[in-house]
Amino acid sequence: MSTFDTPSRPIDFGRIESDELVALVRTAPKAELHIHIEGSLEPELIFDLAARNGVTLAYPSVQALRSAYAFKDLQSFLDVYYAGASVLLTEQDFHDMAWAYLKRAAAEGVVCAELFFDPQTHTQRGVPMGVVIQGLKRACDQAQQVWGLRAELILCFLRHLTEEAALQTLEEAMPYRDHFIGVGLDSSEVGHPPEKFARVFARAGELGLHRVAHAGEEGPAAYITAALDLLKAQRIDHGVRCTEDPDLVQRLVREGIPLTVCPLSNIKLCVFPSLAAHNLPGLLRAGLVVTVNSDDPAYFGGYLNENYTALLAAHPSLSAQHMWQLLRNSLMASFAPPALKLQWAQRLDEHFAAGARG
Ligand code: ADE
Ligand code: ZN
Image (tube, rainbow, N blue to C red; front, side, top):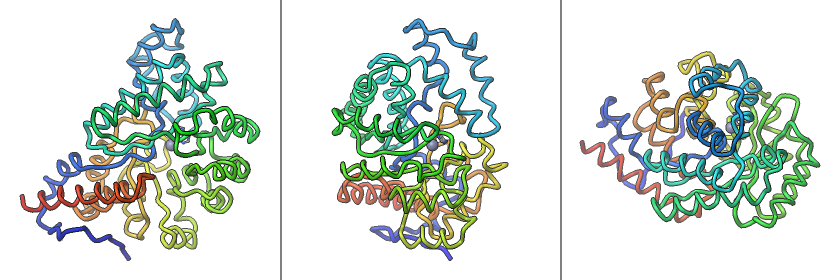
């Protein structure tokens, strides 16, 4: 079975040639809902910031650092990712990192970006919470002013640390409550199930924050169920292992829970052996609210449009209507106000209708 939404105007998807589809997708309005801003730090910027801050890196050159980007699983990536983030010290550093990402996002048609950040990676090194949040927020505000790109922050707890540390992190962030819209859960998944963070997510809910969680990337389908039941997660980050539990798939469809899937990430971290073997088309055809995202683009070989393009190349059976649905899902699954989401969706429909006219 496949489930499709209806566009706000008739679109003759069949008239869109497959060779035009890539360009149409690349220029379409879209949202990015799963991007770790620390994962957008390009090696060149890591070296610039290291020089600016007098930080010594374990790698002699940009090229040497880049050549370390061969990962066998999530943990082998996280070790390199946390080392890269060690160059971030000042508010200007956090601003510059987010600004570099948002500039690329704007050029890729992104109208809404909900950015994950990992405050504990920085506060543990003595960087004050205010430095992290205010630097990121300044870049987000500028993106709105310059490009009309809505950029919001989601504070993630590191699941390899304790819930007490997460609770303390949330408290520390309270002076900046209006600077972020939600909380998330990331880092090493296996062995750190959602139930470990039930209290801090309940507290976040009381504070009116949105809730998302990584689940079913490397961890089992049961972690997705626990994220829904115990954390009240409104979106599941990755979630690709949901197919191991058919009842869970039915529930995700029924409840319309979006999955923020990251195709290139899943290949780099060996979740799937190849993009051709990725289950995203199957998830979409099952009626799940699938979205395409970049996760840690500086480390995984591509930003958002590269994810769409590589997906299409590996799965030529994905039609214009499938791609429209993925793009629409991204906009509708964002935490933006409903009226704004509808405006974006209408822009998407106009874009595809114009593409169908040729
Ligand atoms: N932190 C950054 N990228 C991540 C990923 N793919 N999974 C879990 N934690 C992360
Ligand atoms: Zn992620």
